[in-house]
Length: 337
Image 1: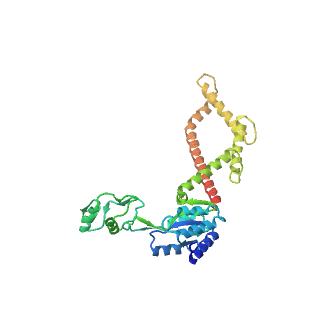
Image 2: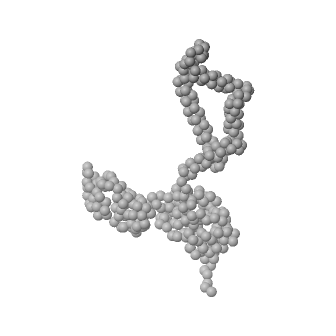
Image 3: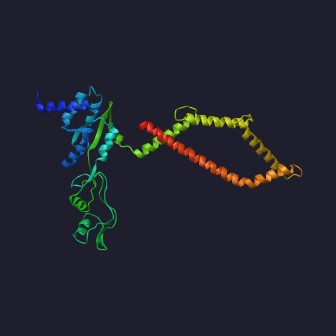
């Protein structure tokens, strides 16, 4: 049996202690991060997360040892690509991912590095005066010319496609143009919480779209609660108002006299009477002078009344929409505290 170095045993024990201590444990890739920037990132994460670099096989052993107490955590072993390290925290995985993504910075392209996406040199003034640099641009495939005493790139040009290595001459040209196409930062590969492993693609969410979806869901739930008469603290007032309005409408249509319905019933009866009178007004002697005068007054006032009613309806719709948005905001507040 091969002898196992004592330091390796101690390292596995320390890694195991770190994994057992925190509820959220992840695997990160620190490849190509300059030492100075890594130190700065660690300082920014102080009191939020702990990063521990180690050998992949030792991390594997620590994860296996912890799998009994943290079911499925050994699945993190399948995400150890690059220069790996363990990150441990009490933050939820989504917050951890966002903090790490926000801490990433742009960096120059070094020769041989793989472009994460197409590297584009934009059209426009380079700021350089006519000279040898014009030839350098043209040599790497960038169309350039002299315009108004400056070297100008004629059109947006892809100099390195996504997934390709950056050539040495292109890297030098990009550096002179102050184009930093690379992104440097701690890359979260996967994270464990409550027996589940989340990969980075699951943690990358569109916050604006998610908030919009939540607001839409809250509005739909609010309207469903009202229309289905399911009382809650947020909807009971609107349910009572809707029920009252419907009861008044039934009372008016059925001509059931109450203190609330008498006015609308009389108004409806008068409107029907005027409609009938208008239909027979052309016949001689069908209506008296008093009724004819009322019909004349109604005709004169009809247009302004219609316009006013339409305007009121628009205002009511705007008020209803505003209430809906306030309700949505209140619902979100309840969700997120």
